[in-house]
Structure formats: C-alpha cells, structure tokens
Length: 528
Ligand code: ADP
Image (cartoon, rainbow, N blue to C red; front, top):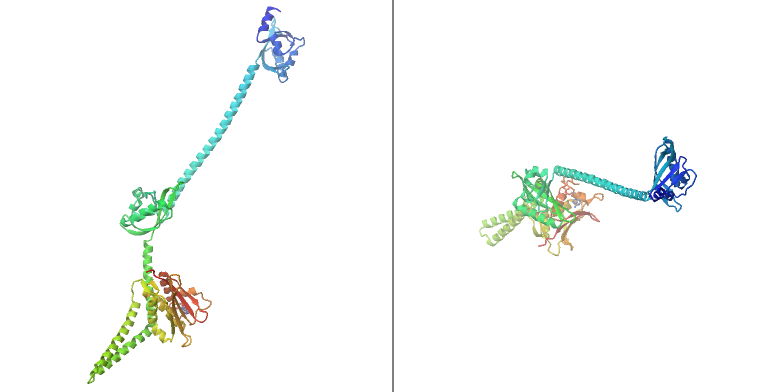
C-alpha cells in the first residue's frame, strides 16, 4: 500500500475515483465502509447498496452530471445489511485530461447520519413545537374569539341596560304617578317628571336630599322615616298617606306605596316610592258622603210624608183631649163652687196629654232632623221599639198584628240611632204596604231580635203580605230605583243597605215558605 493510499484510508471521508461508466478505479477504505461494498469491476455496481428509495434519484443525478458535465451534489442513504441506514453527503466532480476531455469522476462521501438524525430530530422537534405553537395559537385564537364574543355580549348587555334604563326612566317619566327612587337611607336618586311637574322642583334641585325633606310637611316627615326604617328589615310594601306641598305652597294628599330592590346578599339597595294624588278622590268621597247623607235624609222625609196623615191623626188625639180637659176646667172654674180637686185633675190630664203630643213632635223632629252621623253604643231593642212606636199609627190604621220578640240579652250596637231607626221603619212600612191586599185581621208583622255566638245582633222583620215573585232575585230589591209600586221611588231598600253596610252589617231578603217576605239585617255588637 502506497503512502498516499495509507493516508487516504485515514481520512474521515470516503473517496472514490471511477471511469465515465461508473466503474470504480480507486476508493479508500472509508468509502467502502460507508458504501458498504467491495471493489468490483462492474460499472455502477455500487448503486445497489444505495437505499432503494434514493437509488433512482442518485442514478439520474449521476447521468445528468455526465451529460451536462456539471458537478454532482446529493444527499442520500446507503442501506447497510443490518437495516441500518447511513446518510451521506456526496460531491462528485468530473476528471479531465490535458485536452480538457472528461475521463472520469472523482467523488467524496461523508457520513452525515448523525447530522441528518439531529436535523430530523430538530425538524421533528420544530414541527412538534410548531404544532404546539399552532395548537396554542389556535387555543389563543379560540380564547380570543370567546373574549371578543364576551366583550360583544357585554357591550350589548351594557347597551341594552343603558337602553333599558333610558326606557325605564322614559316610562317612569311618562307615568302619571309620582315615582321617587331613593337609596336605603332615603336619599333621592331619581325624581320622575310627574314629581317635577307637581312639586315645581327640578330633578337637580332634589337629588341628594332626603325624601322626607322634599314637599313633605313636618307633621308627616316622621311617617316617611319610619317607613324607610321598616323597609330595611322587611320587603312588604308599607302604605301611607301624606300631605305634599309644592314649591308654591299648594297642598295635595298623596297615597304612597313602595317597592324595594335588593342585591344577591338580600341587602337593600333601592327604595321606589310610588305616589298617587288622591286629593280629588278624597273630595269626591266627601261629596259622595254628603250626597248620601242628604239622600238618607230625603228618603227619611219621604217616609215621614207617607206617614204624615197617620201622624196628624196621632197628634190630634192628645190635642183633642187637651182642648176637652181645658174646656172642662174653664167650665168648672166658671161654676159658683168650683171643685178645685177636679180642676187640678183635669189640668194634670192637660199636662200629660201635652207631654204626649210633645213626645210625638220631638220624635218627629228628631227623625226628620238633618243631624250629622253620630254613632254611640246603644241598645238595639230601644231603636226597634222606637221605630215600632213611630209606625204605630200606620200599624193601627191597617189593623196589623205585631209580634215583637225582643232578645233576652241586652244587645249593644255601635250605631247611629236615627239611621238604624230609619232602616227598621222602612222595613215596617214596606211590610205594611205588602200586606195591603191581605184580608183584614190576618195581617201579621213579626219582628225578632236575637244573637248567635257570632258577635252580631240579628234583626228579622217578617210579614205575610204579597211576597216576592218567585222569579225575582231578592238582591234586585236592594238596587237603586227598583220598585214595583205605582208611586214608589225604589230608594228605601237601597238606602237601608248602604246604612247597614256602613255600620259593618249585612242586609238581605228572603221569600217565606208560606205567604210574605222576610228581611234580615245584622249589626256588629259593640265591644264596650
Ligand atoms: P219602594 O218602597 O219605593 O218601592 P223600596 O226600595 O223600599 O222602594 O222597595 C223596593 C221594592 O221591594 C218594592 O217596590 C217591593 O217590590 C219590594 N219589597 C220591599 N219590601 C217588601 C215586602 N215586605 N214584601 C214584598 N216586597 C217588598
């Protein structure tokens, strides 16, 4: 072995020299090792040890190199017997003679397996990294998309909320009612347009002030403060009525109700006061009350009118008696020996008859008087007895048998005597009228007072008159202007019902099994 051969064998790269057919003329040991082949005379025999997947590519490159006289550079694999692949980097140049004629090829192969492996590993790592980056990016992109969505939703929610707030305040502003929103301490946060119009204060003027200091007079301020305190502990609305004085000292009456808003911890965040001006309503109620009183009075006068003839007759009796006793007394006094004892007796009669007449007139005056409502705790039996006494002339005139059954216990009711008397009198007069067509001596009026254990006095007025038509709903009798009488007004029973209900009782009518009708009413027993 020549020195140069020895030296080339020591080189870490493989060297080979071939003719133009690819027959190896020389190769160092390293080349044989890398190419995994022996020296052989065949052309291109070494191609067989190239990895089958790379072989054609290398062969084509080799041919192109020869054809175009261009250097050859390629990376490919040798297939070693033990399935091991050896990657090489191969550089081939053409060899020329002195006449510049290509005569052979000189090539080098260097083992780049580690490098390729490393590159592959790096590539894999890179692709792994890239994949992870891609995944991360996709993840971030998704998160970003989600955030964008959240942001959009939030913006929309905020816009909706703003719109809703505007919408709600627009509604609250158009509401006719007074709406004031306060914080839990009662400090005004919102004062709707209705409040501004009625109070003549602008929203800016009142915001930040305690609600009780705006338009509420001193005497009602405590009520509002108490409500605010109450609302902090319970959310049941607390109703109250207060006066409201506007910026020009005009007074009105407001009926307030309230609602509370709480957070997730149930802590009070806002109180909404809603107020309705009830000034007109109160005036109307007062007026209606006034009308009702007048109506009651008018119907009482009308009842009296119906009984006027009888009353005149009743009054006539004591007056006639007075006249006759007075005449008797004059007669006795003009005699020569007047009997003083007889005269005194006659004058006593005059006094008692005058008292009788006076009583009748007093009762009448009391009954037709336009007195105010006056309720007191009074024995119901006394009211009924007085009413019967008032109707006495009518009772006698129509030959009515009265069966009056008083309660064994004294029943006290909290009532306006004249009004309840009016009810009873009305029922008695109606009963007498209903018995108009009944045969004489069979007309029966029964009046009973009793109580159950229900804290009510029950009064039952029953007759055996013409009764109520079977097809007629008895409730209709109590309707205003319902009458079956030629000269009737149809007001009596309607007034009776309003009087009894105003006293906390009930009145109804029922058809008797036999002839006639029965009217029942109740009055709550007074507690005192
Ligand atoms: P009026 O007596 O002017 O008709 P009321 O309101 O007192 O007005 O009575 C309404 C109607 O109820 C009467 O027209 C009559 O038809 C009926 N009514 C009242 N009381 C009786 C009664 N005791 N029996 C039968 N019908 C009665």
